[in-house]
Image 1 (tube, chains in turn brown, red, orange, blue):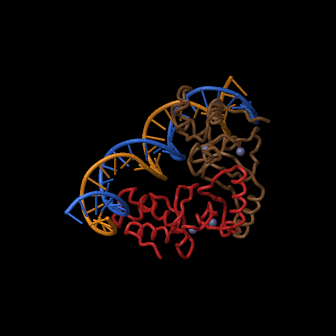
Image 2 (cartoon, rainbow over the protein chains, first blue to last red):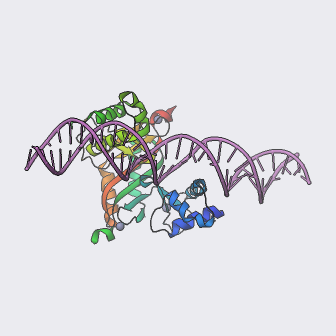
Image 3 (cartoon, rainbow over the protein chains, first blue to last red):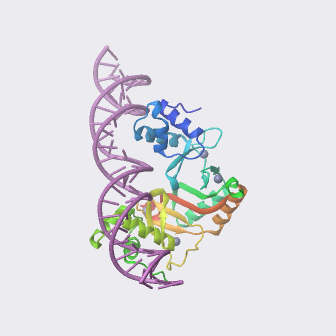
Length: 132
Length: 132
DNA sequence: ATGCCACACGTTATAGCATAACGCAATTGA
DNA sequence: TCAATTGCGTTATGCTATAACGTGTGGCAT
Ligand SMILES: [Zn+2]
Ligand SMILES: [Zn+2]
Ligand SMILES: [Zn+2]
Ligand SMILES: [Zn+2]
């Protein structure tokens, strides 16, 4: 049941899918000027929908967006995601781990805190940029 | 060995310490106009130093800042911190857990990723705002 | 068909967050 | 004394995100 995307949504997703790393909304805008994009809202509205569909992720620590690295895009449901973000090359690795999820759940429970959304972002250096 | 703060740094820290919840840089600026603050940089420069000293934390998911909840401020060193942020009342709870730290370390190691800084932010509803 | 509603879209303007670049003053340390 | 460092103040600018308005289209009940 692949989500049917509008033209704008497809264009934005395409840019993110083919990008080397995460992109800011304004960078996406620039890349789509040739396709008729003129204003930030055209990008932000598409991004909002794509986030809702679970096809992209927002990286809070750098105000930018990245295509979900899963082969399919059926994961409205995929649980907590941890992102490893290389400061050097910008590469983003999406990680899932039940242990983390469990541990965070315990921590939240201890505070009687009802979790809605969890952000985990690890900044550092990837294997390629370390070995050199 | 309490860090000696400049006037601006003290003022900013004081505002954050007495705040109910996290504050944006511009909100801090407004609160300090009576004390002579006129420009954002006066705030941002103080914030940078306070972050460096480990006296405050930056909440990436909301572009705002909060005083460290530890009684002392000696923790340039305090490891990974997880923040529980209430969407309703803005209350922030600072949590530390060796289990999380260990698990994230394993995840990073699996990718041969060298971690510099880890952000964990849990958005949701605190006990007070849930029980009502 | 007519009216209504929901939704995507386009545009302009504005709000909110952060830093560049300049110069001055006080402090430190050789 | 001289240089280096650090904090400070100011102006200007850039980057990120949303408000508010109006248009057009498709679905759907009357
Ligand atoms: Zn994903
Ligand atoms: Zn890299
Ligand atoms: Zn702390
Ligand atoms: Zn609350």
